[in-house]
Amino acid sequence: MKILRRAFVVRDQAASQFSAILLRLCESGNALGAALVDAEGETVDYAGRVNPFDMRVAAAEWRLVMSFFKETRVAGWQETHELLVRSEKQSFAVWMMSEGYAIVLVLPPRAFKSPRRALGEAARELEREAGLAARGVPERLRWLRVDVRIDPRDRRRPLAIWLEGAWIPVEVLGKFQTGDLGRNETGYLTRLGSGAELVLVREPLGHWFAGEPT
Image (cartoon, rainbow, N blue to C red; front, top):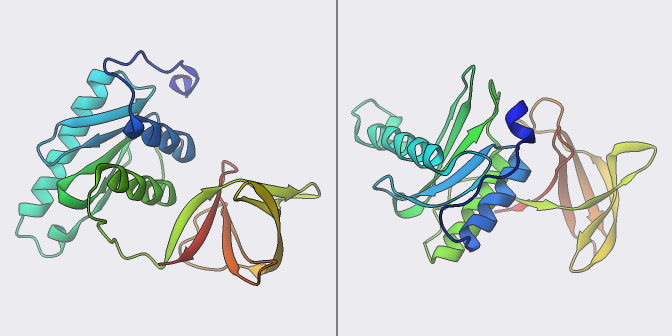
Protein backbone atom coordinates (compact mmCIF):
# COMPACT_ATOMS: atom_id res chain seq x y z
CA MET A 1 0.00 0.00 0.00
CA LYS A 2 3.00 2.36 0.06
CA ILE A 3 2.34 3.39 -3.52
CA LEU A 4 -0.99 4.87 -2.41
CA ARG A 5 0.88 7.52 -0.40
CA ARG A 6 3.14 8.63 -3.24
CA ALA A 7 2.64 12.06 -4.79
CA PHE A 8 1.04 12.13 -8.20
CA VAL A 9 3.67 11.70 -10.91
CA VAL A 10 4.86 14.49 -13.18
CA ARG A 11 2.86 14.39 -16.41
CA ASP A 12 4.54 14.13 -19.79
CA GLN A 13 1.60 15.73 -21.60
CA ALA A 14 -0.73 18.62 -20.84
CA ALA A 15 -3.73 17.88 -18.65
CA SER A 16 -7.12 17.78 -20.36
CA GLN A 17 -10.76 17.26 -19.48
CA PHE A 18 -10.11 13.54 -20.07
CA SER A 19 -7.40 13.48 -17.39
CA ALA A 20 -9.71 15.33 -14.98
CA ILE A 21 -12.38 12.65 -15.42
CA LEU A 22 -9.79 9.89 -15.00
CA LEU A 23 -8.42 11.55 -11.87
CA ARG A 24 -11.89 11.56 -10.30
CA LEU A 25 -12.19 7.90 -11.26
CA CYS A 26 -8.93 7.11 -9.44
CA GLU A 27 -10.23 8.83 -6.33
CA SER A 28 -13.70 7.26 -6.46
CA GLY A 29 -12.43 3.80 -7.38
CA ASN A 30 -9.30 3.64 -5.17
CA ALA A 31 -7.19 3.12 -8.29
CA LEU A 32 -3.45 3.74 -8.57
CA GLY A 33 -3.78 4.82 -12.19
CA ALA A 34 -6.29 5.11 -15.01
CA ALA A 35 -5.95 5.47 -18.76
CA LEU A 36 -8.25 6.05 -21.70
CA VAL A 37 -6.98 3.89 -24.56
CA ASP A 38 -8.18 3.61 -28.17
CA ALA A 39 -8.81 0.53 -30.30
CA GLU A 40 -5.17 0.49 -31.47
CA GLY A 41 -3.78 0.45 -27.93
CA GLU A 42 -2.70 4.11 -27.93
CA THR A 43 -3.25 5.98 -24.68
CA VAL A 44 -5.34 9.11 -25.21
CA ASP A 45 -4.84 10.38 -21.65
CA TYR A 46 -4.14 9.11 -18.16
CA ALA A 47 -4.16 10.07 -14.47
CA GLY A 48 -2.97 8.78 -11.12
CA ARG A 49 0.21 7.74 -9.36
CA VAL A 50 1.54 5.24 -11.91
CA ASN A 51 4.53 6.29 -14.04
CA PRO A 52 3.17 7.52 -17.42
CA PHE A 53 5.27 5.02 -19.42
CA ASP A 54 4.14 2.10 -17.25
CA MET A 55 0.53 3.26 -17.50
CA ARG A 56 0.74 3.39 -21.29
CA VAL A 57 2.27 -0.10 -21.46
CA ALA A 58 -0.41 -1.54 -19.19
CA ALA A 59 -3.17 0.17 -21.19
CA ALA A 60 -1.82 -1.17 -24.50
CA GLU A 61 -1.39 -4.72 -23.20
CA TRP A 62 -4.84 -5.01 -21.63
CA ARG A 63 -6.50 -3.46 -24.68
CA LEU A 64 -4.77 -6.19 -26.71
CA VAL A 65 -6.24 -8.81 -24.38
CA MET A 66 -9.72 -7.41 -24.96
CA SER A 67 -9.10 -7.59 -28.72
CA PHE A 68 -8.26 -11.28 -28.30
CA PHE A 69 -11.62 -11.85 -26.59
CA LYS A 70 -13.37 -10.08 -29.46
CA GLU A 71 -11.67 -12.25 -32.09
CA THR A 72 -11.79 -15.63 -30.35
CA ARG A 73 -14.28 -18.30 -31.35
CA VAL A 74 -14.96 -19.32 -27.77
CA ALA A 75 -18.68 -18.91 -27.22
CA GLY A 76 -19.63 -15.88 -25.13
CA TRP A 77 -16.16 -14.35 -24.94
CA GLN A 78 -16.77 -12.00 -27.88
CA GLU A 79 -19.25 -10.02 -25.78
CA THR A 80 -16.80 -9.43 -22.91
CA HIS A 81 -16.93 -5.75 -21.92
CA GLU A 82 -15.45 -5.90 -18.45
CA LEU A 83 -12.36 -7.63 -17.04
CA LEU A 84 -10.76 -7.84 -13.59
CA VAL A 85 -7.35 -9.46 -13.05
CA ARG A 86 -6.32 -9.90 -9.41
CA SER A 87 -2.64 -10.48 -8.67
CA GLU A 88 -0.11 -10.30 -5.85
CA LYS A 89 1.70 -7.11 -6.88
CA GLN A 90 -0.93 -5.17 -8.84
CA SER A 91 -4.44 -5.78 -10.05
CA PHE A 92 -6.05 -4.49 -13.24
CA ALA A 93 -9.52 -3.68 -14.52
CA VAL A 94 -10.67 -2.99 -18.07
CA TRP A 95 -13.99 -1.41 -19.05
CA MET A 96 -14.93 -1.30 -22.73
CA MET A 97 -16.53 1.80 -24.24
CA SER A 98 -17.97 2.61 -27.65
CA GLU A 99 -15.94 2.64 -30.90
CA GLY A 100 -13.23 0.40 -29.42
CA TYR A 101 -12.12 2.74 -26.66
CA ALA A 102 -11.52 1.39 -23.17
CA ILE A 103 -10.65 2.46 -19.65
CA VAL A 104 -7.77 0.59 -18.03
CA LEU A 105 -7.23 0.78 -14.27
CA VAL A 106 -4.20 -0.19 -12.22
CA LEU A 107 -5.56 -1.28 -8.82
CA PRO A 108 -3.93 -2.14 -5.50
CA PRO A 109 -2.62 -5.71 -5.04
CA ARG A 110 -5.23 -8.46 -4.64
CA ALA A 111 -8.17 -6.17 -5.41
CA PHE A 112 -11.34 -8.22 -5.06
CA LYS A 113 -13.56 -6.23 -7.42
CA SER A 114 -13.52 -3.47 -9.99
CA PRO A 115 -15.18 -0.14 -9.10
CA ARG A 116 -18.10 -0.71 -11.48
CA ARG A 117 -20.18 2.27 -10.38
CA ALA A 118 -17.26 4.69 -10.73
CA LEU A 119 -16.24 3.10 -14.04
CA GLY A 120 -19.73 3.40 -15.48
CA GLU A 121 -19.93 7.06 -14.50
CA ALA A 122 -16.47 7.82 -15.93
CA ALA A 123 -17.26 6.00 -19.18
CA ARG A 124 -20.39 8.11 -19.73
CA GLU A 125 -18.45 11.32 -19.05
CA LEU A 126 -15.58 10.33 -21.35
CA GLU A 127 -17.93 9.31 -24.17
CA ARG A 128 -19.78 12.61 -23.84
CA GLU A 129 -16.54 14.64 -23.76
CA ALA A 130 -15.11 12.79 -26.78
CA GLY A 131 -18.35 12.96 -28.76
CA LEU A 132 -18.67 9.17 -28.82
CA ALA A 133 -21.93 7.30 -28.98
CA ALA A 134 -22.93 5.86 -25.62
CA ARG A 135 -22.11 2.17 -25.50
CA GLY A 136 -25.30 1.42 -23.60
CA VAL A 137 -24.03 -1.37 -21.37
CA PRO A 138 -27.21 -2.86 -19.84
CA GLU A 139 -27.43 -1.79 -16.21
CA ARG A 140 -30.55 -1.75 -14.07
CA LEU A 141 -29.40 1.46 -12.42
CA ARG A 142 -27.17 4.26 -13.66
CA TRP A 143 -24.82 5.39 -10.90
CA LEU A 144 -23.56 8.87 -10.05
CA ARG A 145 -21.01 9.78 -7.35
CA VAL A 146 -22.65 12.13 -4.83
CA ASP A 147 -21.89 13.91 -1.56
CA VAL A 148 -24.04 12.75 1.33
CA ARG A 149 -24.56 14.19 4.81
CA ILE A 150 -24.64 11.31 7.25
CA ASP A 151 -26.34 10.68 10.57
CA PRO A 152 -23.72 11.35 13.32
CA ARG A 153 -25.16 8.40 15.25
CA ASP A 154 -24.84 6.06 12.27
CA ARG A 155 -22.20 6.93 9.67
CA ARG A 156 -23.79 4.54 7.18
CA ARG A 157 -27.21 6.23 7.23
CA PRO A 158 -27.87 9.22 4.92
CA LEU A 159 -29.63 12.39 6.08
CA ALA A 160 -29.25 14.66 3.03
CA ILE A 161 -27.74 14.71 -0.46
CA TRP A 162 -25.99 17.62 -2.20
CA LEU A 163 -27.99 18.46 -5.34
CA GLU A 164 -27.89 21.59 -7.50
CA GLY A 165 -25.90 23.58 -4.95
CA ALA A 166 -27.87 22.75 -1.82
CA TRP A 167 -28.36 20.03 0.78
CA ILE A 168 -31.62 18.20 0.12
CA PRO A 169 -33.00 16.11 3.01
CA VAL A 170 -33.77 12.49 2.21
CA GLU A 171 -36.26 10.17 3.89
CA VAL A 172 -35.00 6.62 4.26
CA LEU A 173 -37.76 4.25 3.17
CA GLY A 174 -35.78 1.09 3.85
CA LYS A 175 -32.70 -0.94 3.02
CA PHE A 176 -31.95 -1.60 -0.65
CA GLN A 177 -31.29 -5.29 -1.18
CA THR A 178 -29.83 -6.41 -4.50
CA GLY A 179 -27.14 -8.58 -6.00
CA ASP A 180 -25.43 -5.34 -7.09
CA LEU A 181 -24.25 -4.75 -3.53
CA GLY A 182 -20.83 -6.07 -2.62
CA ARG A 183 -19.24 -6.95 0.66
CA ASN A 184 -19.49 -4.15 3.27
CA GLU A 185 -21.70 -2.05 1.00
CA THR A 186 -24.95 -0.59 2.34
CA GLY A 187 -27.87 0.47 0.17
CA TYR A 188 -30.95 2.55 0.96
CA LEU A 189 -34.14 3.36 -0.87
CA THR A 190 -34.77 7.06 -0.15
CA ARG A 191 -37.29 9.73 -1.06
CA LEU A 192 -36.69 13.43 -1.70
CA GLY A 193 -39.05 16.21 -0.67
CA SER A 194 -40.30 16.33 -4.28
CA GLY A 195 -41.50 12.74 -3.94
CA ALA A 196 -38.82 11.35 -6.25
CA GLU A 197 -37.25 8.11 -5.04
CA LEU A 198 -33.51 7.52 -5.15
CA VAL A 199 -31.24 4.60 -4.35
CA LEU A 200 -28.17 5.54 -2.31
CA VAL A 201 -25.25 3.13 -1.83
CA ARG A 202 -22.32 3.59 0.53
CA GLU A 203 -19.17 1.77 -0.60
CA PRO A 204 -16.58 0.43 1.90
CA LEU A 205 -14.27 3.46 1.58
CA GLY A 206 -17.10 5.85 2.40
CA HIS A 207 -17.94 6.92 -1.17
CA TRP A 208 -21.63 7.37 -1.90
CA PHE A 209 -23.38 6.71 -5.21
CA ALA A 210 -26.92 7.58 -6.25
CA GLY A 211 -28.69 5.21 -8.60
CA GLU A 212 -31.45 6.04 -11.03
CA PRO A 213 -33.25 3.72 -13.51
CA THR A 214 -31.64 3.50 -16.96
